[in-house]
Length: 152
Ligand code: FES
Ligand code: FES
Image (cartoon, rainbow, N blue to C red; front, top):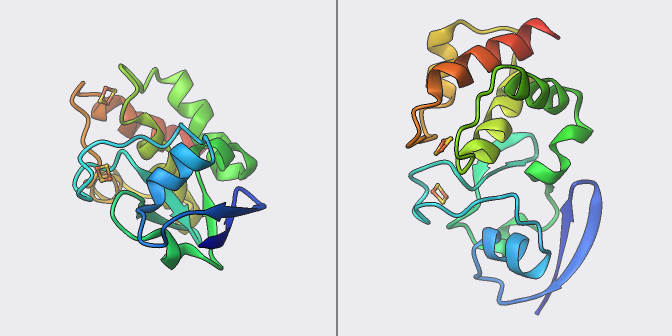
């Protein structure tokens, strides 16, 4: 079956089973490898993308449910001014270690900045609570998010 997906501002026609979780279509069919597969159970945050501006896990929901929606992956995040600020702040604060969780965290932080211009650390922690980091980079991630907000 051919599905049409709008990703990072472009339309893509993809032949696939409509029940396939979105992440497999992103990574395998479209070669957008920046989105990472972690748990595959909507429990770790590694696979986050923006869907209509909202942070959304891509590892379980069927690709069919994303037709007609605006998907932004880590590859397109710098096309948004919030995403550019978040990426710069992650670099400036060395907020990535192994980097496996980083794409999901950058996407989530971008979604947060799109929602609000400022937030205290508790609010940022809650917004990023679904994102696990086995390297313990969260203190630097929190600094990065505050820096990105201050740059707005
Ligand atoms: S891979 Fe999707 S939340 Fe873990
Ligand atoms: S930087 Fe390694 S898992 Fe987060």
